[in-house]
Length: 269
Image (cartoon, rainbow, N blue to C red; front, side):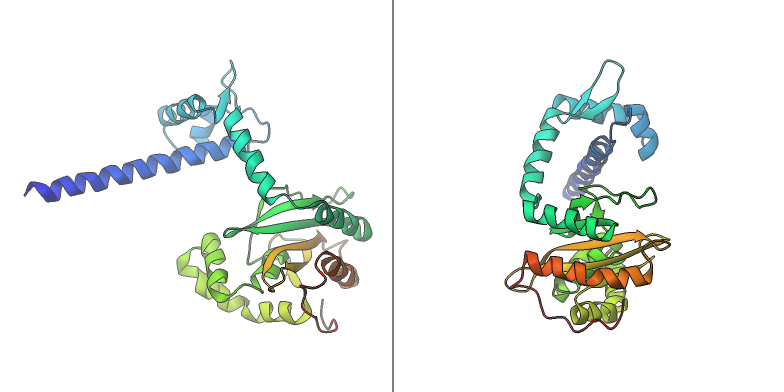
């Protein structure tokens, strides 16, 4: 009779270790994205709704391993080993100069914000960005993840993935239970993306924001990145969005002319 209780004890210990690891990763994420804010262990405990003693213990472990550094006043910032990991990871997904230049050129031509996102695993990560000079704009940062089913970046990439990959990407965002339904609702729109060559976001991701995006495909027709133009609906009107689509598609073609499918003449915006 002792064996079942031993097995249960091992299972419980495994769950405890897993839970502890998840909490440690959440603490590390808070430090990594703090953006220079004066973050403390107590502040992390409040944000993550965990016991203060647990937050202090996790932070101390991260400090010991060089992933977090703590000054004399207890303020936290990324440690040297975390910076090293971040730089090594960034080097793997950083776009070549042509992509960054294309984003900047398209931003200058349209006067709006332009982003490039790369498909990294099951996430679409921003790797290049040109901010609009206008005060009224949505601010995002390199390293942010684009929502796959509500942004034009995400929908442009989803349209060219096979069904299994589409579901993998959507599960990461909406969960396994909702992924099938979300994909079913998107399928007519994704068909339009493949037909016309660009994706549309009409205030789906953010109220008052309009976006147009198109995918970059490799030689086998698989999407590896996308570029989008975004702006407030009051300025980036339907007419201006329609006028920007040829600029967007020309940018895509210039970056990968042999890999892009032929789109039908524009019939919608």
